[in-house]
Length: 130
Image (cartoon, rainbow, N blue to C red; front, side, top):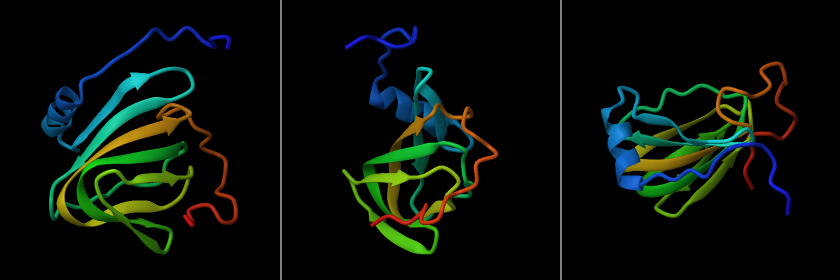
């Protein structure tokens, strides 16, 4: 398989990234890893906290490392537990709520965070996870 792009090998230690997110005012460690095709960040929400994010221009995959909460996508709620994987399409209204235990989420963005298509409207059915 031929390599695409010029991104070098990258690595990060989860405990270091969690510490970085804890020190951020918004609980987010952005662009822990990044190439021209995707980026990875870490989002930390405290128990009882509020997630005030707005829709993004990129697709996201969340991996729940720790914690328990609910994710609302559109009008539907989905349980979040350690080990849960969640896909949220670009432009879908979504947020975490009912955060019962501190929530630590690894966030995969494609294309990389901040490089999406801001003029593309959501398609019918986006934001519905089955």
